[in-house]
Image (cartoon, rainbow, N blue to C red):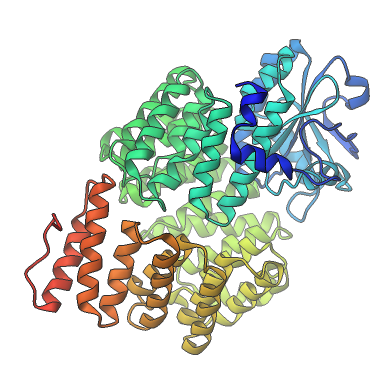
Length: 609
């Protein structure tokens, strides 16, 4: 598309007018110099000296970051593929309580083959500030491509940079087009944060118009369409378009399969995901992560025996070459979708992984994380506890290990053990980031603890809210702590009302909260007025045409005594669901039958007309 044509896109024109602050790092600007305190692998790189010769990728990562670790083999592959074209990839990491220099050096040593490119330690955080903070990038991994003129050519997730990197290496890249895509990608990110899904899809439309051969904008719209926007037919069309555009890229196919693996409500989507995973493995047979995605998809498609056979093949291959990677297989085998049929192989894999990773706290923590979710299996819980306790023994300074131990003790119903850890490590736990604090708070509100961890849970979630006072997830967690842990209904209602106020323009959050209040054990029946307020507000701000939101409102009306209104709303929900192409409306018709029975009317019908 020509530059003149870009300006005809109203959304693009509006965004360009106010896209970047004067002091913000962005595509097209000079790349800041690298301020590195230690080059851990490879020679030191000076951007000024590299001008005219090299293309540099500056990628930010951390040893505790799962997506960063998953990206490493691909970055290594790119470095090997394009080394003769002057490509230098630099993985830059900075210190934090879980990412000290010694840990980074050990990680780099242990993963030399996986991380086969230059690695640098940003000891004072200066490079992080100059790049990540200046470019308003809040998550890792994030990659910056620096072209041969020393300009920032592209910013984004390293798994998405193949096409732009090849253009930069060939000297055919268009900074203007990259800049437009960056502006639009930032808008998608911002609208996702506020869950404005219609704006997300509109922005992805603009991105697809700018780069018609890019599967990303089609892949990224699938979840909003199949979920909050309740448009499964459009989701399937987007998935099929993404599959066509990704046909010869193992990475794109793998991301497509992974992104839609749990989208059960859209007919045909899982078939697209299976095709994508299988084609990706044809292109790259040794890809462990894609094979795990395929196993998930097979289970979710009801092909359990094929999934177990594939998992056994994966186990044999991984155990013989890199047992540390068994953690991903263990996680897959313990998913609820396996319905317990993968537990025996998961325990076998965990025993092997514990044996090989006895000195690796990260591996042990991941094993504990996966096994503690297994229900009614003493062997799994004992092994999870063994791994979790060894992890904190190896790295007592790492708070995430203690958080994992708390969660594992909760799973084991060891209340005294949980309270002992809280007493011993409360200062460490309270210093975690808000997301971790929310997880701690939820764990300590578990019914198995009988409220004995609820006081600390409230301290944890309030500490998170001090850092992020408008975080809706943290507010919802505080509500749960007050309602389920402390049994303080008055305080819970106050928090719930504050959540409704802050989520007043967020229909997805309002609907999720209302549904939880109406259906979850410990909540249903006790907060009907709050549920009705949430569902009514959701209906108002969403425009009243979302079948899932109408289903929630119908239940809220029913539980509040407005039975006739519930019947009318449920009929409308069924009508809209059928128009949207939802194949299974059995739960909707069952609800209508229940409402009709209460109203003394004939039973519900699948056709509301």
